[in-house]
Image (cartoon, rainbow, N blue to C red):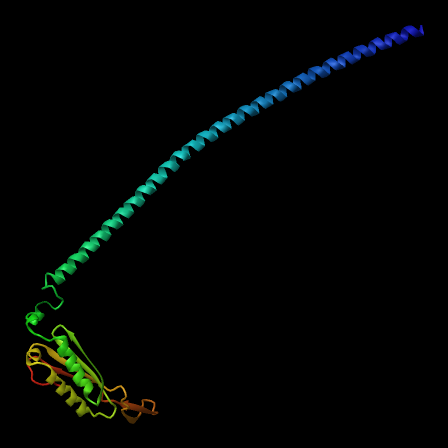
Length: 233
């Protein structure tokens, strides 16, 4: 009797185990299906997102291509405009220069120099005038310059030379110039005294303080018109 009871118990356990296994397998299959469905759904969403991203990316690319073309066109237009303005300014400047030179007798002095080619005032005659001045023991330096129809005679005298003596030297310098030149050119004589000490004068300023003022006679200037016979100081 005891042996029969033991076999019955073994069969019951086997059935129970089989049932548990079947139910476990069914549950496992369901879970696997759910996981597969979830994965499929996620995959579809990812694909949709990627497609959207690609469509979004394609649109800006077109804009990026279009924008540089506009910028290049604007740059080119600005450069072309600058070149046109620059050329216009050059042409205008050239026209003004031509008008001032050719249109006015080919010289900045215009008609004022008419007849100057007939007057001879050679380099030799200019050097003679300067050398005659330098020979004077009271003159330390001398030079001559010509601007249009005006002759500039410039020389420096020593400190001990008086105002009247300096003027006499200037008057005598005209002896080295021909009458034809003196009758055509105006002459300006400028005399300096670089070593002049001057005379001191004591004077009270606005605050009542004493100040020293130095008076100098030089430089002096004399002018002779072509129609005049002497220099006016």
